[in-house]
Image (cartoon, rainbow, N blue to C red; front, side, top):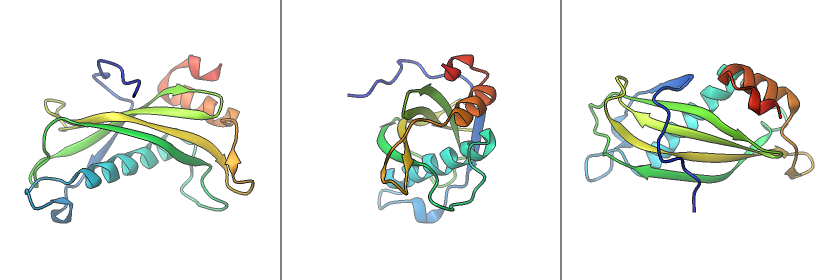
Length: 151
């Protein structure tokens, strides 16, 4: 069972615009659920760069792995729909980070999907989880204007 909040924030500190591609459509002529997951992944990596916890290089692995993904599909996305993904850090634990997201129209009038992704800080050399780096906590706390992430 997921721990989704009953209501999502009306605004996020980070939005990632998405270009719906013809290749994203399935036989029902709407965006396939797998493509929506790709939209969220693209937004999540954009968030990492915008918050300063990742510079885009992959030397030695990034330092996080996906532990859990939950998506509520609310309304079908069609080829001509304009889409953006809002994403925010909702919680930082000892070894994990929980991100909430909302796939929506740019004017926030239509929500297509929502959910959360739990990421685990990971040492690829040791092949095991690790504590969330203090530097990440500081950068995300600053980006989200949330001092609670420093605890």
